[in-house]
Image (cartoon, rainbow, N blue to C red):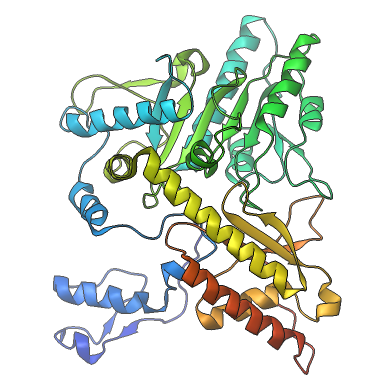
Length: 462
């Protein structure tokens, strides 16, 4: 969630005629509670008018999150929003559905012997935090059993990981050993990852689908490199796979790729249900191949809602909607349906990548062959006369929201634009996007005056 400041200016909302039923106040207070109640219809109308300036979800090519759902699924959200998933005594059916989803995901990730343990979460970031905590506590307990110090844990991952991993390290006092990228390589190098581990390493994180360009880290090669470290007498380091996006793509499109629990060194995996799992934001999953990798010291017994229930999540009460929605999508699509949707997303990504190549001034960084994500940059921004930040701003005139950003160290000199081709972004919409890209490329290239600098980022201090 973004940080927000206090509202310091007088920004109360003038009452428009549609809200003229209110005669007790001339304005609707902003940033504070009104003195008196209003009707449900008036409150809903105000909110509707406030949201008019939000972009259209279908034209948001920045997000990996699901932005489209069938009416039946939206009704399920409405019907289950009041169910507290933590209250298993009162809602045993929802609890059973959660367990069935975890079993289904375990099978999808080739953990079929029944020894796994897992939980649903509010998203993949929470799931990643839980996986990191499990690795940290396992390392601490093993060190203490040997009478060794636990003051300097570290976690190894590439600089291209999601921000949740640096957050984890910052929150829990773990040294983030970030392996830099390199020219021509936007994934984690197995040998560099292996070289970074030592006796204080709690684990290594591989990414199955970078948010930077959609590419998969070579999980199997990373595992082999870590196996060699252990065989040579070095530390026996666990491997976690952050499959936030790829966890619901690779099982259907990349069936020959070994990345999951088929690899013995992979001890845990997290994924977002609300990305290519096809449910709205608020659903995540974390699985461990065996309870051995989730220390019992992290699991709490809760009986305040009746009964005794083990819990290991950062949140307590939360709606069952995301879990029930995930179950709906599993029933609705099955293996064949998920494969078809993933294939269509990849087909659109390939179409977009081909169209961008044909335009000339752009170079493809991510081609959609792993995640259905296309990332591209300008071959020569100075020669073109504009940057991807100008292009990103210009896209907004057509309603498109397309992010521009710099790649992580050591590739921060490369600025890219990313297009996420998720469900709902059809070939027809992709054609319209490419037409916008062609038109704006021509406009920016032939602009008669030097373009003003576009701010690439703002700090919180700004």
